[in-house]
Every structure is written in structure tokens, then in C-alpha cells.
Image 1 (cartoon, rainbow, N blue to C red):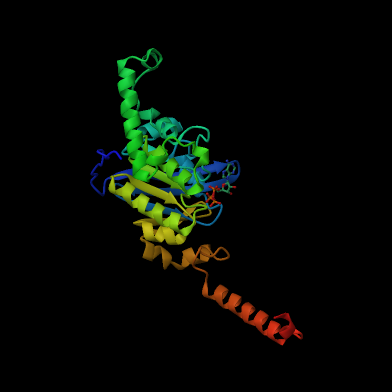
Image 2: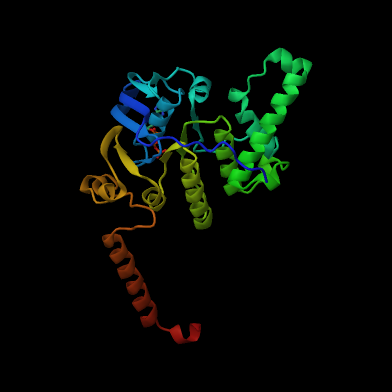
Length: 298
Ligand SMILES: Nc1ncnc2c1ncn2[C@@H]1O[C@H](COP(=O)(O)OP(=O)(O)OP(=O)(O)O)[C@@H](O)[C@H]1O
């Protein structure tokens, strides 16, 4: 396993991402409305909200996929360029809600693709395969292997991406995003479809990423994951930022609970729901006990 020599120490507090008055309209529908939002160096920030609240649309505004109808997004003080590959080159990397790997490429090749924004070798050098190209290629492979070791996939570097189990595909997506050497990593539902062990491992991985000096912004429906992980959580409801604060503040805010009514927090059903289920179970049990011929059924 190679040692990662690129750990950076970033002073906390510096504003990495600064979104001001971001509005995104699709025809008559305002998906995101006048949102101010910051992420500081050293932070893990969560973005939550009910289905259709505008989270992914807002993410897309931060990564150059959408140009906001109104407002401005700055990364380390500079207004974001209006193209996603330029945003990646500027220092913001992301993963997607639906995994987007090159299924028929190897694990290592997927990470090497992620490095292209950091590879300075030009077309002629690549075509002529001169010494500059070979040196750059070796350095890229070494860095890619470091990143695979970091996410725990170095032993599978030669496997085809499509043959990895689901949880490892998500890890590979993260390694590929890290390959662009970002200052800010955006994770869109990183634990979707994961079992509890995989979710826990992802939590550790995100902490480790933050410890490398990379700020993290994460959208997730798993509230336990979000509240364990995040220094700060913002809640979007119907495109507007409703509440923002630390986990305890957000969890205790009545407006947040109200916004989620009818869509209870995962792993945390409301008292009424628990009582309702228990009453239904007791009723079913009583009915079974009273049923004639019950003894014969056993
Ligand atoms: N490209 C688009 N064109 C038109 N409407 C869109 C587009 N993308 C999103 N919307 C609408 O904008 C609103 C916000 O959607 P968005 O996907 O951002 O919500 P979300 O909070 O990410 O939801 P989920 O948690 O279900 O992923 C929804 O009403 C959606 O239908």
C-alpha cells in the first residue's frame, strides 16, 4: 500500500463556498429560491429536505451543471465558471445520486479518468509518448493507487468497475472525485442503498476526507448519518432555506419536524406512528387468539 503524502492542513474558518441569492427556475417552477449558503474550510455541511425540496437542483447550481437564474456562487472568492469541467478544475468535485462509473473500465482506470483535470501533459506529448508523458502517467497512476488505498480498494485496482459490489462502487466514485484534488467535495446521497455497516464505513471515510483538509457538502435522506456527521446542517423546503444550524438545533426545530410530517425521519418514526403500529399489532394478535380452530393450526 502506498503512503498518502498529500495531506493538507487547511485553516478552518476560511470560506470555501459562498452562494448568494441563488434562484433556479424551470419555466414557471421555482426549484430553488434566493438561497444564501456557505461552506467553510474544515467543515462537513449537510443539506437536507423532503423529496422535491430542491437539493439536487441547488447542487447542480454549485457544480456548473445549471447556471442559476439569479444569484452568484463563488469558490474561494472566484465566481464559478459556467461549465462543470471548469468547476472541477477550479476545485469542486462531486458524486451523483445515481452512480456514474465507467462500468467496463477497471477500478484504476476510473480513478485515472478523474485525474485528467490535473494532468498537464498535452495532446502531442500523449500521442508521441515521450518521456514527459511516461513520467506524468507514472505519477498519475501512483496518485490513483494512493486514493484507492485511501478508500480501501487498492487490492481491486484491476477489477472491472461493474463487478464491484454496490457499496464499493460508491467508494470508487468518491476516489474518482478525489482524483481531481478538490478543495470541496459534494456528495449526493452517498449512502443510498447501503446497509448499516456500509453506511458506518462511509461516515468514517467522510471524516477522513475532512481530515485531509477537504471541505464536504453532503445531501442525504438518512438523518442519523447526517446528524452524526455534520458540523452544520441546512434544511431546504420548497426551494427555500428554512433552518440552518448544528445538528441539535436543526433536530429540535419545530419547523423542520413540520416540514417532514408525512415523511418521517428514517430510523426515527414519530411517537404517534409507533403507537399506531403497536395498537394494530396488538389488535391483530388479539384477533388471532380469539379465532376458532387456532389450536389446530399449531
Ligand atoms: N431539469 C428540470 N426541469 C424541470 N423541473 C425540474 C428539473 N429538475 C428538477 N425539477 C423540479 O424541481 C423541484 C426540485 O427537484 P430536486 O430534484 O432538486 O429536489 P430534491 O430535493 O433533490 O429531491 P429528492 O430528494 O427527491 O432527490 C422538483 O419539483 C422537480 O420536479
